[in-house]
Length: 282
Ligand SMILES: [Zn+2]
Image (cartoon, rainbow, N blue to C red):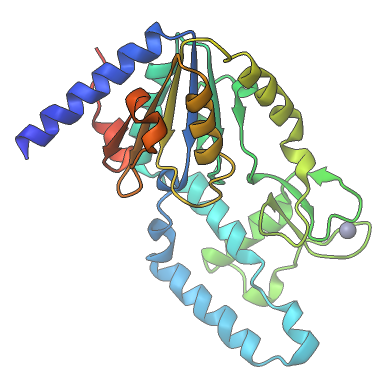
């Protein structure tokens, strides 16, 4: 066990050095970096609420089911994110700040919890193509407009969570244009409004073009097979074509490297959040 700890520390400081000696640093963040939803799911009041919502829904039939209270779940998720910190995740992000602070970096993440925006990363150097909780949209994206999160609904959901008002007093946020449900701007809605991330995506692709022939340190943090076409496969391609690139692939189980690039990369079998949180920066 002690040997493993030493090995991880060595790899971590080697990676830290490599980042700081590279022209560019490309970071991809995936599933392992997701906020630990158990914090919410194991909360007793949350379980009561789930039960109440399900009971309420079973009393309804046919089209009426649409009027269910499922819509409050994402607001409870937002509440958990805002109020109940994930400590180890916090440590990992702080370490990532230290690794990148003096580098020319770009971070792409498929995680939708918005944790990335809590830290001192340059927002011009972050892209979150799967969205998050920062904006809302019409479920069917009738007019391609993003709005601020519905404060009124959020406040009421929190009051309900604290048992100060009843479930029936909650009102689902509705699109002002077409009357559909308003939801957080995340993949998973009926029609995802991509204008939430596209401007940043353009900056990202331009930045990527700049890595050609540059010494580039590429780091994959917990990126498994969820949407591999966003991070995992493009990163492999970058390292394959750029002979000056080096890839660190850190994942508890999907750390394997393709043979074609194995001389310019290393797969590290470790949960990426733990790997960063425990890493030591001089
Ligand atoms: Zn609409």
